[in-house]
Length: 300
Image (cartoon, rainbow, N blue to C red; front, side):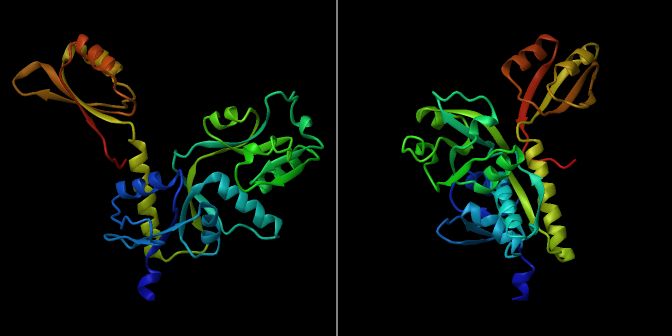
């Protein structure tokens, strides 16, 4: 039991749009885990970290109740849980500690395409189908709108066709599903992405140090997600022009080339995509021996 208490427990979506991204990120942070999704718990082989594979809307509750130390979940789910707790007279016992920059979507209100939407007042005295009752009520209250949320657990977009609602409030990514069901997005309630939340119950010094290490590694992986490492040779006279052509580079490393007084070697981390056009422009400026490598991780 004591050994179990020293392990960090992270709640992760068992199946869904965040699952693969979440597990891949943790693996890129150095965590080796069992892969079977048939298990509810995956044990870390090289770090005292366990993953609990659960429904996404259970994650904030598990962290709130201190069953898990951390959770990876969408901001929309976190905010819905926070509002549910407030409605019951409780404060959320979790905090957001890191944004993961994937799983981007938005919670929006959508209307049938033939609806004349004139702003929030158009929602007055209507029925709005949603599975996000708390977030929708919060939006309506803040805008002084009297409307009736209608709970739908799935297939929210068909509610208007069924005559169950005048509008819907649901997650939107590309908008293709709305269009396929004759709906148009009219208002955005929340911009969401995957985040890391942590329990407010104080952790031991050892566990907090491990949490800090995980966050540092996540930051190191995400910062260089689209970065490339460029190495090239260049004439000293063209150094200023070549530096200006390196995309997203802060301060490249410039080194003398053995046996050559008029050429240097340049190494740079470019935090933007490096296209063929970039290399062609560098070559036109006098660069040679260009080599582009992926960057897996970086600590500042």
